Image (cartoon, rainbow, N blue to C red; front, top):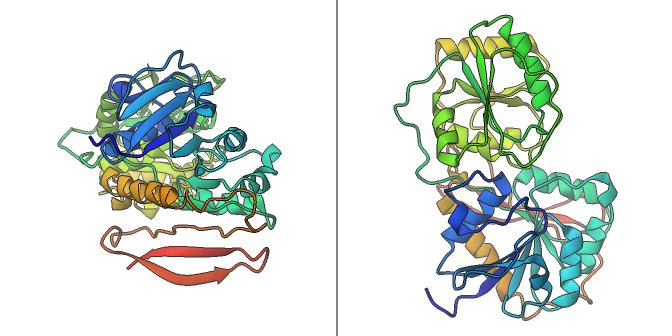
Length: 388
């Protein structure tokens, strides 16, 4: 690896435990942590990375990936650019210590209502936002309203290039839920209990990354709690299930990594239509349902038990494509560092959305178009990338 490779700082103030490349395949990780490490690993040799994390006690590691306590990010002089996971306030504070460095918030969550000043603060500090889906980017722009906005783009979360279907036999009576319990598990339990009255043989396996305790109410009959699973064991159970079972309408995913991974191994999912990034991530319309419609749920289960559907991952979620997008994005950040001036930019900045379209034409040829769409308010424009 070239010692001249530029160094990128990744600042994570919210991780439940420190994480580095050594834990990628050895312990269960949340989707955000797993995504960060996949990109860091994929871009080794092109960039060096410093991971500044809450709970990291001492600096360790060197070369391609080093870990440091969070406060070292404000003292660091070796990083040419910074990505801040989720926290716009930390990003703004980081700007005061690094007035000339390119900084972007890598946003994996939807900001709460109390963050209305987020857009204006980031625009003033010349800090971009990189979302994880098109739907999240559009929702964020709407959330900011007509006032000053930072530049908003998105790059999907990645799934492994070699994650494909195999000949694992499926259990037509087994459903699977593999997310943190705060992501609608209470409602999932209710729907499963009602569904089991119609399908008495159904079982529901629940895997939990284990970083959050949550009241899910009474656990129905037929539920098997699997606890925290390493990624390879989680994928193995995913392959055996009839489907990923997520009939809930209360928690909106910004991407939904396990949804994309399920489709990659040929497992369909049942998710709420129009919620978060669900419509963007699933590979077929028949996986989108009304979570409150028990008849629709029953019909889909019965249909898939009779004739298992053919599903596949969208090519634009594959690690090879996503890491290339990240390489391009980081190179763009670094190339703009020389002209960066956080104090003299216009009050309203352009909002860039890299818009991708679902379907089999994905990843064949990505052509940048110069079409601009005026939104009629605040002089904001949306540049779009289209698949041709």
